Length: 119
Image 1 (tube, helix red, strand yellow):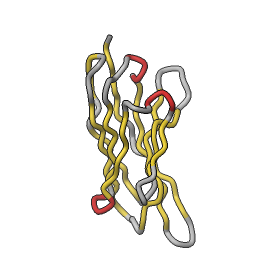
Image 2: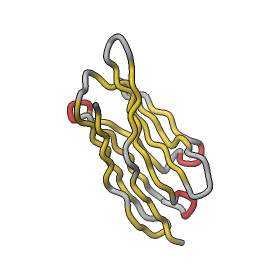
Image 3: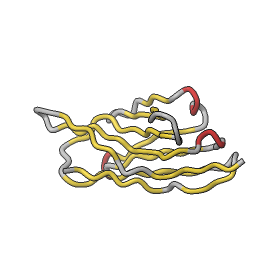
Image 4: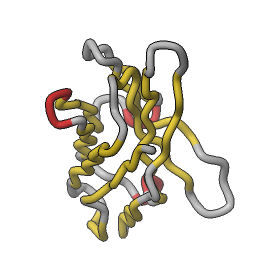
């Protein structure tokens, strides 16, 4: 089994910054894509950003230029630097990882961390 533990959420004023971290532990062979998703009240979960093992990134249009995803493969950790935060960024942020076990792959999710941006 794999555990993904997020940290770094909290309350911040509009225009402020937060940095989320997500550390993977447990039965890990290699990790392919890692990413961040978010879910606001009454809305579906949506992609925020993803990063491949090689460092290629993909962002939702709404966060491009404000958020930066990065990873430390040695630490099995993915980060999300969030700048110029807006009230509409308020959501529970979830970490996701696709784990490669050679003959199969598995997706795991973290428990989520709340990000609240006040106006």
